[in-house]
Image (cartoon, rainbow, N blue to C red; front, side, top):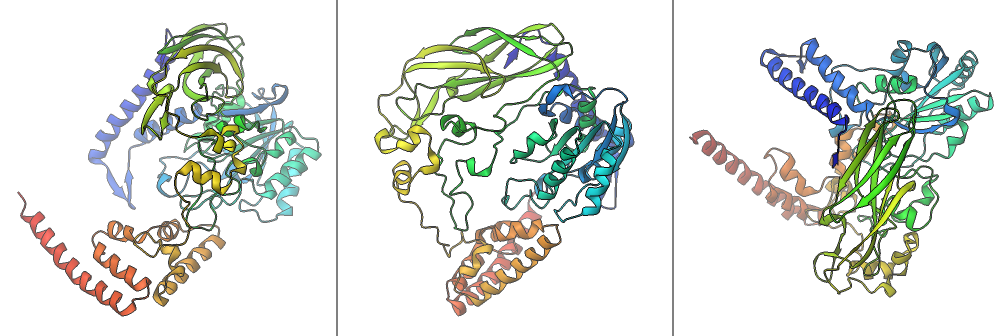
Length: 553
């Protein structure tokens, strides 16, 4: 994507320079760095560069979802109450493979106390894991009385959202919502700061005046949140997924993540905004949505075969950045299609009153679809609608382009796929899904093979398998009750047996895995013998390999 004569290039270059200087400095510093308590001990100036880079990333990501009567940004010296456990103990990153060791860690309470507003106090407000706490609620309500505006920090905790398991619900914990409603009943002006790694049900949005979605914003995210709340930066993030009113509105409602071995993706291509628009389902916030402290005007669209250009103007009074989004609507006669699909976007920085010409390129991928009959990417013939908007729902410019097709072979008999043509994929039946798949649906029964997971060994025909499953499951359940899920156990329970040969550094061979499979199938004696034989063979093969590697020149 190209943005002509845009000073965002300068900002990008500035960011790239920061990344480059950080990288070079880290390389230089690590030459003489030492490990202390198992962690790399870096000089303070390098840690600062890391932290500054983390701040830049977070600042560009702040997403303003609601701002009634311009309550944000907060005016200088506004008296604010900081409420919510996440303000002092930030939820700033995911768990498992997304977890990093921070060089520093900001929290919102400290950052707000250093800002231009007056912090009258802090209250925890609720138990992070959802336990009732009437004392914390009372303290929060009393504190809010002393403030002009309440900053309420809500979010998903580490148990609700973690690597290795699916979320059990899309709601915030009820004690957080109850506190919000109580403060609303008390007549408080409330700004919600939301920390979460994915979308949530947001039926409670009418109980607050503003919502700033901080995502999981990293080690310097709290400073970026404070700067967004006080107007040091202008929020410019946009939602990367649709936010719905309630889980029952989702296209995968009836088939997602059951207890069966397989999950049926009956929704097909209708995922996220593609479904909600096609099926005409009302959402809380559409895909690509995000507010700003300024306003933008679009004009003069020009559509070519390989690009779309238009003008964006900042019609407000402060500097702002707008993410313009390009959508394409296919003719939809050869194959069922969404109402529109995102094909490109561009982020433009604009001073008050400034206009810039934005160009977003198009390639062959913008118009193609996969044809199961020709077994290749094809292009449908007809008129394509080109749309530019602030979000997937807020379309401000549109035009059309006519393209030739690449085949006349239809991939499906649309008469046999009525729910896919209409987008009503919540009601796709088994027969219709089979027609789309082109084969029968797997029965979902656990397969006692190399592909069986450790978490499925309770379905095996081996007492040893049952025992291993019971031990691992019991250990996991105990960790969940403590509020800190054991991610290693979650990983192990979802790992296929063949993974043992890849994840044990040569300790277990695929031959040993086959012996375990025989054991689980009920051939107890034969399975154990095979495991022992393959164990000896594995030792010999490992020693031979070590010798070859040692002697390799």
